[in-house]
Amino acid sequence: MASAAVAAFVVLLWVGGMLLAFHPMILSGLRLIQRDWGDTRLNMYILEHGWRWLVGVPGHERLWSPPVFHPAPNTFAYSDVMLAIAPPYWLLRAMGLPADTAFQWWELLMATLNYVVALLFLRRVVRVGTPAAALGAAVFAFAGMRIAQIQHPHLVPEFYLVTAAWGAARLFDGDGSGEAPRGRAAWWWIALLFASVVAQLWSAFYYGWYLVCSLGIVAAWALVWRDTRTALARVVWRHARALAVACAASALALWPLASHYLTAARQVGMRDFWRVEPFLARPASWLFLGVESRAYGWLWRYHAFSSIPMGYEQRLGLGFITTMIVGAGLWRARHRPLARLLVLLSFTIVLLVTLWPGGITPWRLVWAFVPGGAALRVIARFSLVLLVPAAVGVALFVDALGVRGWAGAVVLAATAVVIGAEQWQDLLSYDKYAGRERVAIVANAIPPGCGAFLFAPPDGRQDPWWYHMDAMWASLETGVPTINGYSGNEPPGWPFYDNVVRRPAHERQLLAALDAWARRWGLDRSRLCMVSPALPE
Image 1 (cartoon, rainbow, N blue to C red):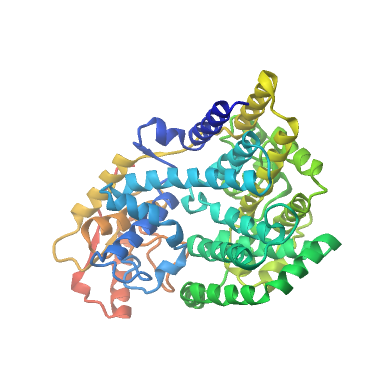
Image 2: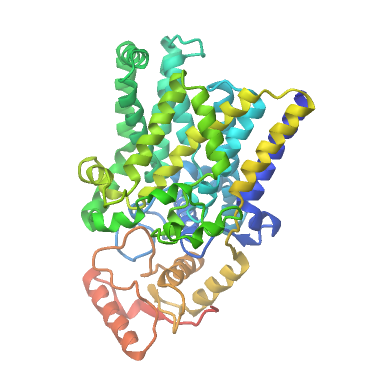
């Protein structure tokens, strides 16, 4: 293909992928936000709190204690802090964009970075042609299982996993000649690997833990074969000092995060296994793309799929044809250590995170014995790591086809269309202007002189977390701390989750709980307000 045609193909795949993932938002002219009123607004709040802490907005001076769940400390550590992926959002806010619009552009930028970084990785590390690399990168950035997680925006950016893989691969294979790098080159790749791990943990703990676990799995499998075992031993022997320095520097960089997470763990405890079990993948999950899938939504009619618990977290399929393409590409390159290790990594992850018939799952051992394993809840998200081997498999398959002349271009385009069609989903969204109106109603109900408020809507028909998020954003609007809160955990003894007033007795219970909360934290009860404006449902 001519260079102009190749460039056009790369751009068209990016445009098509962005429309697959964000068509409600893009086609509405950014009027709609994906995906729901809960976790989406929580992630938006986390980014906004980080921005306000950075610029010193009153009430946000303490990074680890945002003005929610007031005045419980360290509540920022109840969820992913997103700091290593926040700078683009900060820049957009510095340009004067409103918080919700800056968030929308941030999400589009994160998806674009996924595509670009994966494209460069496949081109320079896997060493495939640009058309093949672009299609593999599109699978990585815009696959159905990633689109299904747009309701958890902190799971959109995954490029640090790719840069970590890039550093590890180059550390073993240098410039692709099979000779490991020496000197400064080795230090650079070690720095890239460890910096990527640190950045990922400062972005999203799930991805960070899964990245470290994946590196351990790959290292373990590398010991099985002589060629990879020899290469691993050579790297460790030659670069022991650099690896030790990188480990020490990474530990120092992660200590603030680890100390706050450990404090939160002592406050709220680790997760019991019965809370984890519903979020383990089922065998059918690996074929399931969700009821919103245009190509495979019909699978929901069958019991094997409709019986999957927490189905919104179990959309782990790539589509039948895409999966066969991935398998064919990796199988064809099985003589390459990279492809071999990625296949073994994939099978290991599937084995670990699946609840097999009879209630058998190796994850129980991970939960019990691996550090950090008991802090994880939605175990099926480990599947997102598999998008790296999926991208490599697609790229290798397409590269093997050879793209020459019009016939090759047609085959390439047809492959892209089929893969894209299998990822196509109907996506949920909400009107950001309606969101602003909801927040304004709550903010206007907060009386002057209020030191902190609890929002308790009358007769609300939605889940309580809708209203907690309304209160958190009203707190941002007014600068008044809120006792409401929504996150991955709750402060010990916080009694306000069910904040919807459906009868007078419940209102009295909330007021009594507010009295007890004031006594517990030494707050001036006269300055604690309970506001109950009605919101549009």
